[in-house]
Length: 64
Image (cartoon, rainbow, N blue to C red; front, top):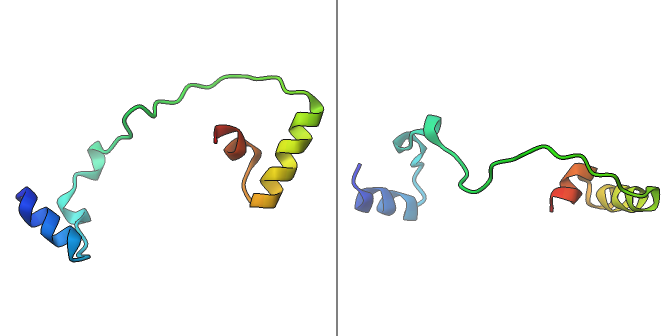
């Protein structure tokens, strides 16, 4: 599919996912590496309260 056709279909709210090779999809500059971090208990409690308020996990709060 040509770029003009793809753009036209996308702009007119047509489903363009069939035109994409989702097997090769990646997020540039989003490589993750696991680390261990020690936080004081008061900070963990604060993170947990904020996570509960937002309805997300503690890990999500830390990532942001």
